[in-house]
Length: 109
Image (cartoon, rainbow, N blue to C red; front, side):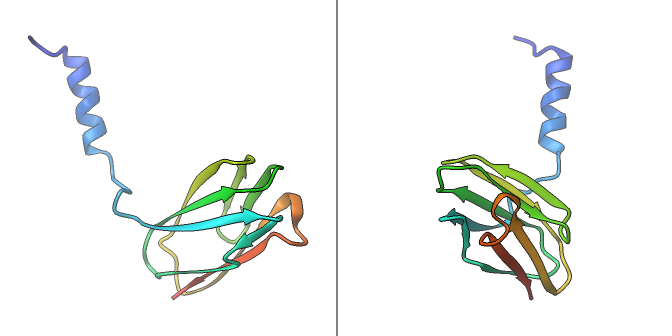
């Protein structure tokens, strides 16, 4: 049985996409409108995947102007955010809906 050319080309394109499967993975949890851990250490010059899980009953937003990232995290859901590679330093993030308590920072070393 022959695979139509269009299907073959589509599968080839998917196989040749750059992979982030090798990206290091880190986790943040939102509970009681606060991030845990509030400081997350990641390596410099490396692309990383951050899984953000919301254990609160209300939505929250992961936002960072320094990282140029913004993502809504619905109650009971997990989202992934890719950052980096970053230079060594500190990068703040916050929950836009509870800015007084949902604060954190990435420590890149």
